[in-house]
Amino acid sequence: MVYIGSILLVFIGLPIGLGLLFYFVPKKLGYPRTAKYLAIIYGLTTLTIAFFIAFEDQLFTKNDAKKLVEEQNIKLNDKFDLLKNESMTAPGEYYHTFTLKISEKDKLEAIKTIKSSKNFKIDSGSINSLLYFQENRYFGPKIIQDYVTEESYVREYFQPSRQQGFAPTFRRISISKIERRLTFEDIDE
Image: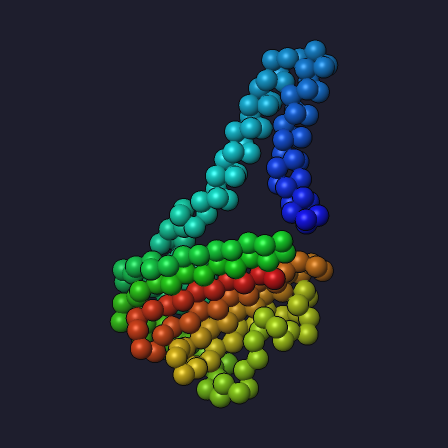
């Protein structure tokens, strides 16, 4: 119950309190017009931020998806469909995943990119999840790991945060062996 109260205080009470501060301090100092404008600007800014947070998944585009995939050196040259997009946020954690239906040509090219990398592994027993088995999650090296499982070809990307206590960047791209599907996962915890 205390946890829920804390969340309500931070996400509702704090913005309202700041809005009241923006209004009443200038008004008490003799600037009622400035107080009104500050309160309106602050209110609109807060509502805009809340709108973008609430509708983050609906505002995600195919161009956003393409950009995230191509950051991992997987090129998408042909048209594709965005089949699913989901993101979840909790205190200290963020999870975003989407699934694309790609062309056969892009699928084969992506698999070729993964298989031709110098660190490609076939033995799944020697693969550790980069997300959970890193000795230094904050200051270690950037790591890219490519491997194959029974269902898919996988590229994992791990980038330390370079700051103590901040989540590293972990991204996984899986390309189905059977279907023309590419699944992207971004996990920050």
